[in-house]
Image (tube, rainbow, N blue to C red; front, side):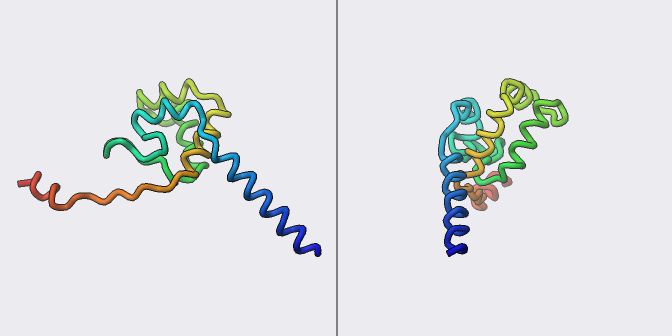
Length: 113
């Protein structure tokens, strides 16, 4: 009986954590212009955020905010984010399915000729 209660509480915690990540933050619109609404980047010059660890995304955004990490575009965008925004964005992007980048070898070979 005790084991069932522990399992039920654990499942409840997992489901509530998942529900927390399911809500798309309003600030995603700002990120979407480069990183895509679900974190799948719009081009090869912008990193994919989908599937990244939430702690990594939080750390990176906070480093842009503090100036520890330098990028004029990201520093400006991150400066406008509250701590709650950073956490919400990190949870959103980390909960999205990762996009695997596979280079087009034929295109890269013809471009090099």
